[in-house]
Image (cartoon, rainbow, N blue to C red; front, side, top):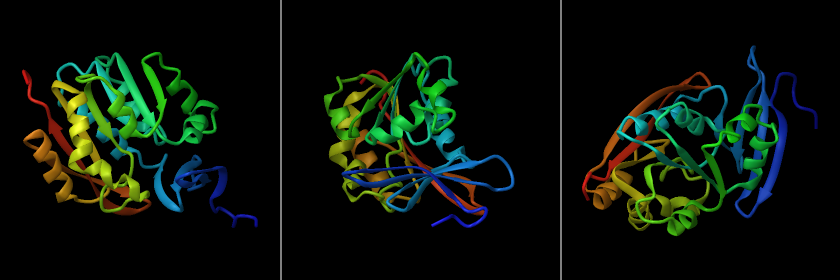
Length: 231
């Protein structure tokens, strides 16, 4: 079936154990916009990137020396891109479970991807974030940024519910250095996530972030927790 004039055009598609991942292109009277969907659910696009950038900038502002950063979820690369604008960052590990998504950025299907992943500070790990963090050494990172799903209330993959609960957050706490921080992105207010972070880290903060998404005003949320220095 041909797409309707001006409608989205499929650029790439893959299937994995988690279902279908689709990259589409749409025209909005200007430059082409790439849109990522997982199992038919909108994940992100290249038109509205402020929340991905805010995730990085909010985290970087929390730490005096964010030399080593872990980003959970590559997406279309905008969180990583913002992290790399900070000259204090010496190494950024990106953990992404979908190998095809990494490939689309590496091969230029996502046009800004090759230059982004070629940065010598970047290491990409294709793995489940829970597995990757369980294998990481204690106090490995100054910052952990998690954007692997739409938050506990709007999951694309039901198995990701565990990533917003205390056992996994305990693992996150273990890999964050004293004086470091973790920031978790959520599509909606998630008081249960704030409670879980507070239980693990001793304190947590919910920060609303307003955006315009496809001509709709939305509020996304950043959940922030810190590891006190000297602990």
